Amino acid sequence: MSVSRLMPWLVAVLVVVVVGGATVWGRQQDTARRAAEGRADEAEAALASLQASVTAVARAQAATATAVAAAASQPEVSLRNSLDLVLEAYKDPSAAHLAALQAAFDPPALNVERPEAEHLISGGTHLGGQSAYDLEVLGTTAQGDRTQIQTREQWVYDEVDAQNRRSRCIRQETEQTYTLRRAQAAWIVADVQLTSPGPPRDC
Image (cartoon, rainbow, N blue to C red; front, top):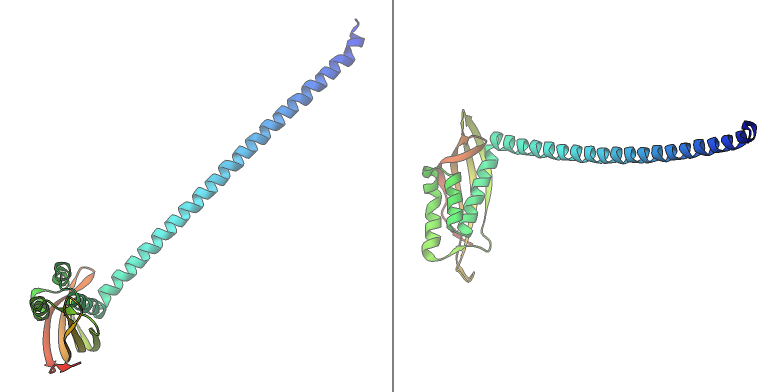
């Protein structure tokens, strides 16, 4: 068979080979493109997750810094928190609550708050019902790492027994001066001076 007769067949075979190769190459390119797109999507998702985590950490750090700054710059807030601990200790004079008082009050100040807790423990009672306190700040004086706060307070001592039956309820108004000392990022009640203790009244 002459070359001239084989030429059409050779051309046909060459065309099939070229078309087949182009098809395979196209499929490979499409597969590679899809794989690249998949990796890009995964990277984008990972980046978004990382950004969200960084944002959450930054917000948490900012909130913590704000809270620390507030506690450090506002001894009145620390005083109210300490008095909240006193009320909770009177409501439940347990070892845990009394230990919390020891962390918030220096011994001279704790000596002012302890007698009521000892009274409740000895009588097998605790505060409940209407028990609460109202605090009015009359003045604040900063003295370096110490701050004096003058207050007028009204406390309601609604004493109940283990069955929550009222045993006594008195209301007492007092004025006092608290001395707070700075302790790192917080304030500790160092001393309490009663300046105008009012007589207790029945609720």
